[in-house]
Amino acid sequence: MPSSKKAKSVRAATLSDVGREAGVSAMAASAVLNGARTSSRISPETRERIEEAALRLQYRPNAAARALANRRMDTIGVATVFESRELNPYFLEVFNGILETAALHEQNTTVFDWQRGAAKLPGWCDGRIDGLILIAPTLTSEAAKVLPGHTPFVAIHANVELPNVVNIETDEERGAYEVVRFLISQGHKRILHVSGVAGLVGSDRRLRGYKRALASAHIGLDNALIIPAGFCSDDGYRAMRSWLQQHAGELLPHAVFCVSDGVATGCLEALSEVGLRVPDDISVAGFDDTLSARTTLPQLTTVRQPLRAMGNRAVEVLLDRIHRQNTGDKQLTEKSIVFPVALVTRASVGAPPAIKRVVPSRR
Image (tube, rainbow, N blue to C red; front, side, top):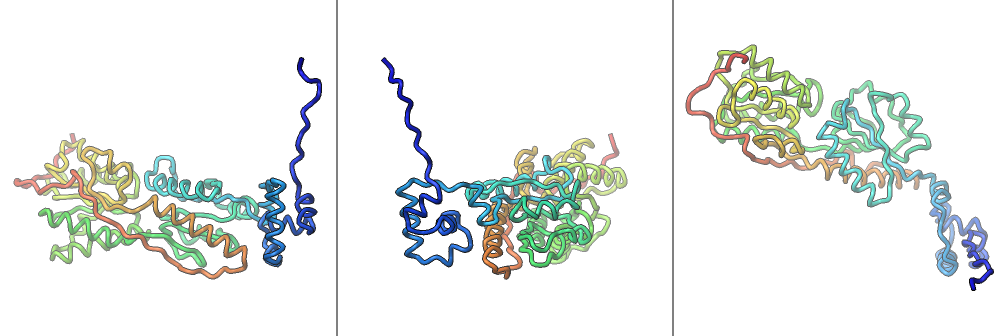
């Protein structure tokens, strides 16, 4: 016959219980167990008594109380200036790195859309997030003025100088130089550059690398072979289609160096539409080594930026900055962190065709 007695519930230990067990006040127990900044005033002996008492009583700290004591939300904001981050391979690579390291440190992440509400950013930085990672290769100086000065920030590929902000970047000029030198080493001399937006740091650095590589090989610069685009696939497609239409019947370039893999993907589509084969008729190279570089046909020769590792590092730097700010140390240990780049050769680059080709008329 089942017992009619109800099981006796076990009450969870409280801070008052821990304080009594350790011979201190509940406030002192809270300071130690919830990691408040005032806990530094408590002696090591008292701290040890409190921690041992908590173990004996199987005390479990309340997450909300811990956050309040630290004035921490354990939440990192991620702001991006990309119009379509869901489809942007650069953003996705960086963001995956951020999520990976944030999870290791038990941090939540929230994404902030810069275009749709930059004016709301100060509100987000007051009580909703502990710090912000800004993925900002197209950020303007005017837009940067809304960034609150009291919030720890880390930027990835910042386009403008941001005061008291660590910028994580790569040697983009070197990367562009290396890939164009590789094209030259394969016999290509007429190299078209589909560039980014003029005035943006990333675009300008890659353009400088292109020019420097040509100069180092004693190849004259032809401004007609530099065409502005943007950074996404649609930009590359439109720029290449327009150039092909304008130069129908003229000598075809040996190769195309694109400012990004996204642009290169669009260029491949435009070239295919007019019957040009890559790399048999013309070679194509990109920049970034995002997923699209490995899924195009043919796969892209490109410059690898360690985007996931940059996202990893951004979280580590931001958490260090948050900790330093909470302890009153706001001094930057480093202003810029530069990651190396690497040339990745794939099937989209071959030798120039033996017979000179002309730009075909639109089909």
